[in-house]
Image 1 (cartoon, rainbow over the protein chains, first blue to last red):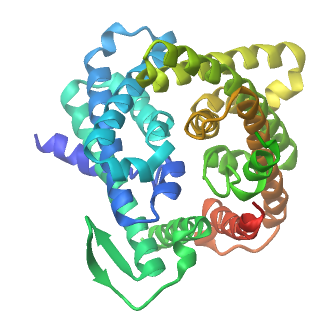
Image 2: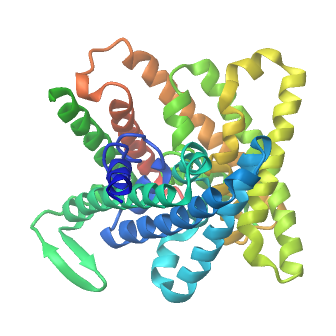
Amino acid sequence: MSNNLALMIRAAIQKNPIFILLLGLCPTLAVTSTFEDGIGMGLATTFVLLFSCGLISLIRKLVPGEIRIPAFIVIIATFVTLISMMMEAYTPDLFQRLGIYIPLIVVNCIVLGKALSFSYKNPITPSLFDALGTGLGFTGGLMIIAGIRELVGQGTIQLMGNTVVTIPINMHLMVLPPGALLTVGLLLAAFNWVGDRR
Amino acid sequence: MNLLPIIIGAIFVQNFVLMRFLGICPFIGVSKRTGPAFGMGAAVSLVMTVASFATWLAYRFLEANGLEYLKIVVFIFVIASLVQIVEIVVKATSKQLYSALGIYLPLITTNCAVLGAAFLNISEGYNLLESIVHGISAGMGFTLALLLMSGIREQLELGDVPRPFRGVPIAFITAAFMSLAFLGFSTLL
């Protein structure tokens, strides 16, 4: 059990999909203009990761190597369709704001990458823990980026209609596309700097 | 059915890479030199155009049978098949282009840009001609961004970049300034 927990933590931090593996950058940049959108996208992707990697791990002995990529993509597409329909029904505002980036979870390199590198070669329980760790690491990264962007860009963080934090800074650029690229670029440089000093 | 706003929109105002962040992975990965960057841009443009055509038709078929919810699965399937065909055609007609693109050609399948263009055609309610024009224009915008980036990066390689920024971080910050410049187009439409 502790092995699996260590696996999960390693997938979230040492192999963080955004900052270490540099995967899934399209949605990272696009949906992090608000904190809520970041969390929403992170949790949706975690859902897809858990179910896809779980199913792929269960059927891994049955899938011939040559067709594994199209097979995995169809499995992932199915779960993306599911979460998309659920979000359309239960969280319509979030669904509208995330727009085309929800179906784009299908081509998020994180999901296919995890499936090919881990779930295809490992039993169900480690695969689930690894997928959960990756999803949580992705969500955490999105929260950091979105938190910075919304806080510096609008001076407040809104969560479900309530203003949680307010600071007297209002750099509107941060919630626009250049702000996304700037935030992620600076964060990556910061991670490199910390990594260098160890 | 005014096509000019679609063209200007896709290339400048809502540039696929610098505004919508679709296709950012090959943007960072391939754009180190101008030659391969242009080849990649051309390949993506071709796939985007044909995919816009094919997915639009596929969606009409799904609509006619009440199967719209299958669009995610069907679209990715169509695009994966198209990329396979393009790869075969490129391999047969131009050996240098094929080896220049290398692994990036099959990776166009998982490129957000192609699937993103397909979904945008549907969500914006374009007809067939508008979808194809949108596909071509989005591809041109992608190629433009890639060419600009590769030109800058060729120069950056010779510069004195601080250690933590070398590689991807400085590329992102450069892209941030390019995006800022493209923001200036926002009142064009």
